[in-house]
Image (cartoon, rainbow, N blue to C red; front, side, top):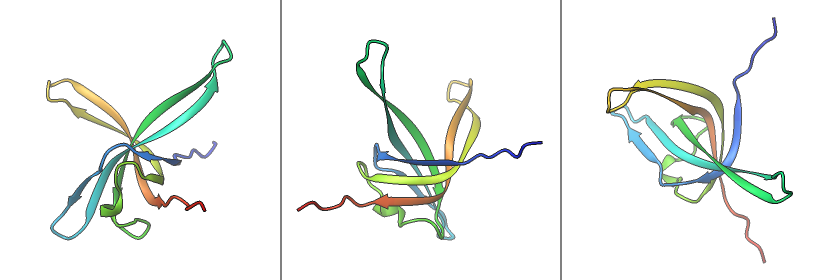
Length: 114
């Protein structure tokens, strides 16, 4: 039987200031939305850009930056795995979301040009 792998490596831009929750023991969890773009030619030969939004969840720890430094518009990369979460919406209907559970986050600082 083949071994399966659930691994994600994305780099994109933070769409809004993230939500950070701090627990009594000092641990933190961050939830942020990151946009990635895909460029392709459509059937008529025109270039198109398609944006995909990804929800990333991460816990504070060894491979994490200070979550308070992550802001809207910054470029970040995340490594982790895809997790499907089921829940009941406010309307009582079953919902399902795909999230990236990150084990590593990195903030990319723009390079200065002369």
